[in-house]
Length: 274
Image (cartoon, rainbow, N blue to C red):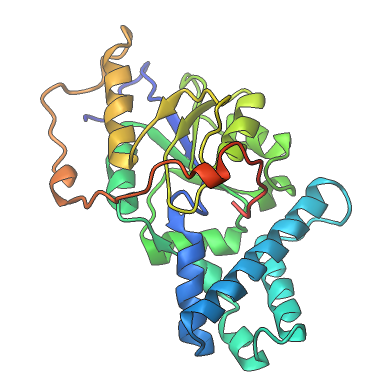
């Protein structure tokens, strides 16, 4: 695609980060195994309790039961709690302090973002703090035009204010942005705030329930890119895309294989540390 010319505007996609662009649970489990020297089963239990503790603190902040604290501080609180409950030794907890900055991207993430940033405006919108997002961007190779943190709004998803932050950050003339997420609870809240929605499945995500009607369903970020290009072609005022342009990144991309909707989670309302 050629650079946009004056008077044209690209659509905007706003990505959830934790769980959608990076494998939060699996990465954390592997990091705990490596840093704490425990087996995978014990590491999975540590990760489950860690993420559960953070999610509960985020919920308390959204409900006004405690003051805002950025996600890296909530991680430290969780680690302190895990040491107190004897799930981790103190030295292991110290080595895990920056674990959230080292979460690994899903197989299609880097190539998908490279394609999307060439054709649409790409933002990130995450419960992760600015510090964590800076580390993730550098360590995982995430590419976008802007990334927004819950720290900017001093509130966590699914509070409406964080989606309002995204709506206020969209380039002029771009239209209503899509929130792209693997979590149905996140997409429902975004839709209620006035955003369009695009669901992408991930193995530990929150799949849509029977009553969910999201604007787009994509099998991967590469499929999302293709769908957005089709929609742009159908827009009469869109003259900026070069019909003959090729996207060689498709040749190098490794599409991830993700399970379909998990019936055990169907319709379940969740509050994750997204």
